[in-house]
Image 1 (tube, rainbow, N blue to C red):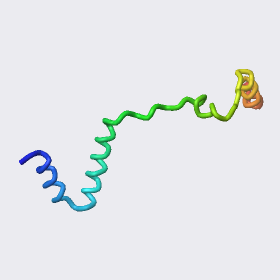
Image 2 (cartoon, rainbow, N blue to C red; image 1 turned 120 degrees about the vertical axis):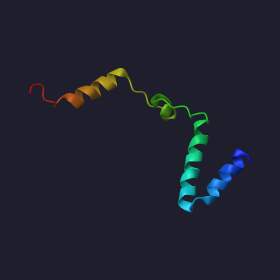
Image 3 (cartoon, rainbow, N blue to C red; image 1 turned 90 degrees about the vertical axis):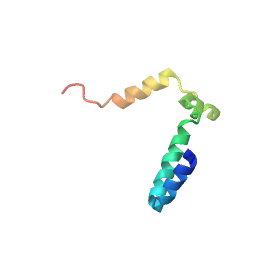
Image 4 (cartoon, helix red, strand yellow; image 1 turned 90 degrees about the horizontal axis):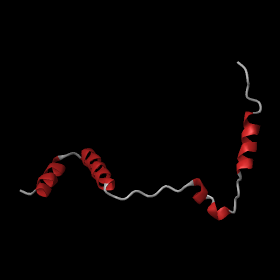
Length: 73
């Protein structure tokens, strides 16, 4: 008996809910071998929107955000 036949025999003996769980595990295992989708940098996400954020813009927003934060405890 081949391993494929042995697995099939064991799967057929399982109840339907356990077969579904086993299918989920098999899908997970097969997905591990697939190449991962590369992550997109934030710059790449808004590249088509013609947005230009400068370091000064960021500094200004930080100043606004922290202006009411208590300085002393």
